[in-house]
Length: 298
Ligand SMILES: [Zn+2]
Image 1 (tube, helix red, strand yellow):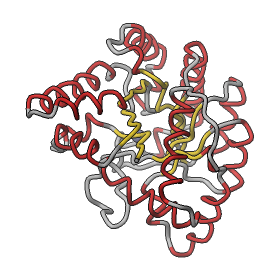
Image 2 (cartoon, rainbow, N blue to C red):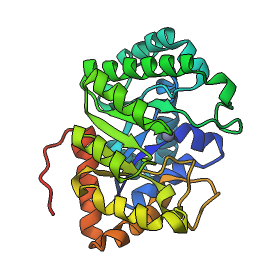
Image 3 (cartoon, protein in one colour):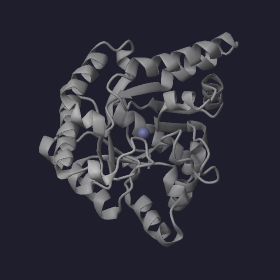
Image 4 (cartoon, protein in one colour):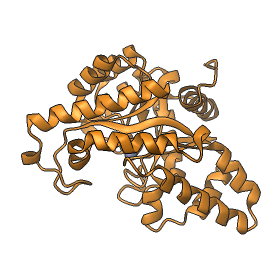
């Protein structure tokens, strides 16, 4: 049994991944929780329709049982990634996000706000081609304001938040403390033990992805220490696919199907029974995003 709390189905589709076959494989591998993540103010309906038409195709191929089972465990978030254009247009973007959330055709499937947050990593070759000259202190302030708007929105809706935080630990901590709404996860956690402690103390979950499998040798002990430090009932598993494929698929297009590699890696570090570990990860995802009362089995 596997979970993937963070992937981008629309990007997988655009990269030529056959989504109906992917869903079929996820069914065969016994996925119990899947969450497609939003990055733009107006992408929610489009992402739902990508998922639905893939499920429809799967059903037409004679696998309606598989399609129904995957739909049952498939969920969505809605939020805005902090790219420079979105930050500058934040008030308008929030209005549009609100409209999409309020008019969502699958209301009970919308279980989180995000990914939203702070990204202070300058990468002209990255998704939004940001370079240092665009990111002055004024833009940092606006970015923080934009993040807090989404935290407030999540509080209003009583939904957990999927936080993106890169090279911006202090800013992220100060935004969540300012708003005082501590419900959600730090996705693709890329900081150390001390930073984890600060988020955990406030009640946040920590999500780890494929990047842990290719930690540099010199930092591997630190990574293992971090993995052992996160309480088992506050850990989430994710791929961030199509990005960040785990070893031995590094550099290839990632899909939720590859998450077993990350599961195995983390389970080995924890020296845990694999089945027990998968059951706990399932409980954690449902506990945070579906607010199912669970008692830890460990
Ligand atoms: Zn993502």
